Image (cartoon, rainbow, N blue to C red):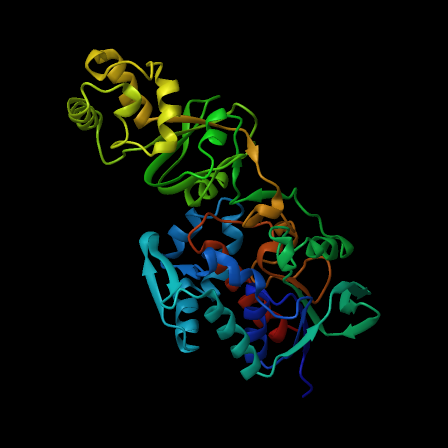
Length: 413
């Protein structure tokens, strides 16, 4: 029997995993990749360390997917987080589990993950075609191939795994949405997720470049008074606002971000309750009792933050420590436990880690990832309207949807 010919547009996480599963199911597979090397976006994930997946059960995984989690049920059953870990271990990449059950290669090198995926493809005879896909070839309600520059490449099935619009320099500049529209699919609005946040608060620019570790952040929706996000970890102040792991995670929880709606409250000393922090300040004040206020905070706060805290506290920087009142000290405690920063917008989508929005999943069969509109056309990865929080969830979605799409394309019909 002649092998089913499958063309996969995109050599990223979803496309490469789709290739492995399609080849394992007996298909003749060609990956069409516009870059000279596959996996460019995978190489920079997790600051170059690559958070491969999250070592959690299915129900907990789905709780970390705010957009269309039920759509992923079949894909995550087909390729679970355990299966993904086993795949990479079998391909010679030892893994480790860190805080929050985040899974990384022991080497801390994303390059090892890309090498394993590409190596797995090559072992299975997957072919690689370097060139930019320009469009799909569709006739009589079925996909027939892919137009690449001046060429037409014909396939029995095509899988679109182009990524979203985030990190366009890696090649994911939104082509997949154009292919989906060409096939008659609707695309939900595209907005950045896991992205730095703009703040109009003057204090951010004044503390530009200051990184904070072991702090906690609570984000409050001021229209309802509800807490929408809480986390502990790292963040950084920039000229435009705030960034860092906690901030990126928070961005995925902020739906309709509008100026003045959300406020971050940063606890600079989360290990200390109010009483203990006050005792700590009293101890410092006793040490510097004859000093000015401005010269008594160096043991407690980063140097760059001291002028900001002084201004917000309303205490004169030249006030002697021994004359600071209990009420003033109470204001200082409150400020250190809840430094307010307004959250007024997202940075551009090309600075985001993932794209929120994409191909409407109501038009996709969740058991196969096949289009309900065009026969033989499949979608996988970030191009779909599915996104998750940080912690390895988005890469696992790419692997799982890629795997089920590859297997389905090779075995259906």
